[in-house]
Amino acid sequence: MSYTDASAMTARPGYFLDVAPMISALQFQPTDFELSHGWLRHVPSSHRFKFDKKGRVTIDARCECSGQSVRHEQSDELFQAFTGWRQHYWQPLQIDREFASHFKSPNAWVRLFRDIRMAWRRFRRREEPVTVPAEALAMVPAE
Image 1 (cartoon, rainbow, N blue to C red):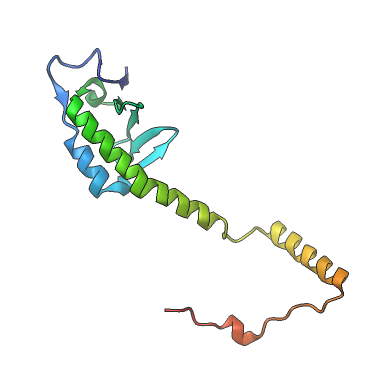
Image 2 (cartoon, rainbow, N blue to C red):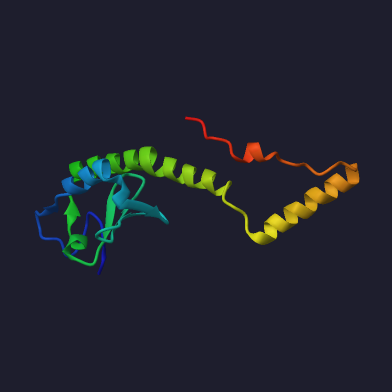
């Protein structure tokens, strides 16, 4: 049994998992986490966490961690840390990745198709091909 929530069957009565190190890691080591299919994954440990709409956490781990409950107060604090991580780290990272993907170098077939399309447009307009001066290719980037 690797999935658990606040009512875990294997949890010791009266014992709650201390998630303070995870809260700290979300704030100070955000690159250690990733979000996939609704699960927050701590990459170094492979522990996975899923939050419901009320902020309760489900833990998936291959160790005893998955059999423990999280104290309600810490669960709220963990959910707030997760929400902050997602808003300030994960979403901007995803936006940056998507934006960068718009400018990646196209493969040879796409480049060939674009060249043919531009040649066809110039032919239809009977325009001369565009030439780029060698000085423009040796431009120095702005500081």
